[in-house]
Length: 154
Image 1: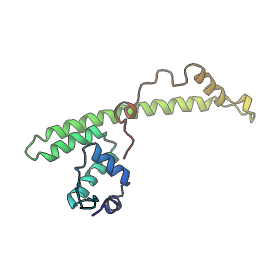
Image 2: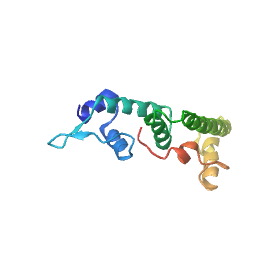
Image 3: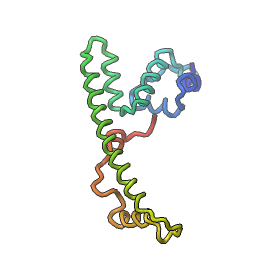
Image 4: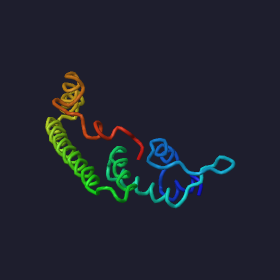
């Protein structure tokens, strides 16, 4: 199958497939005499595996580690466990960060007075104060997404 057919079958943009190839996650396919990529069923199966991992918010490095275990059937399965355990820790940390963010947003929302005038808006005033103090949340740490999941392609 050609790349468009693979993209359609996997529900994945063509650019993402090419990106995964460049990242070494998806092996380069054979090419025709006219230089078209020719993908096999194994490419589709691997791409679906990668997509499922990405839907679980695993980073490309985490996917790469899982693929390494998958590609070596005799290898120790505990390596996959370690990848998932670390990812669960990242997700748990992110949940804590999002819960703190929700508390901060609720506190900001609570500053709203009954006034309909923008100049008396407690939310806008609170946002202005925060912006003048550096533009970010006070005490905010780098999130799991920023620290671990730097890539954009899904």
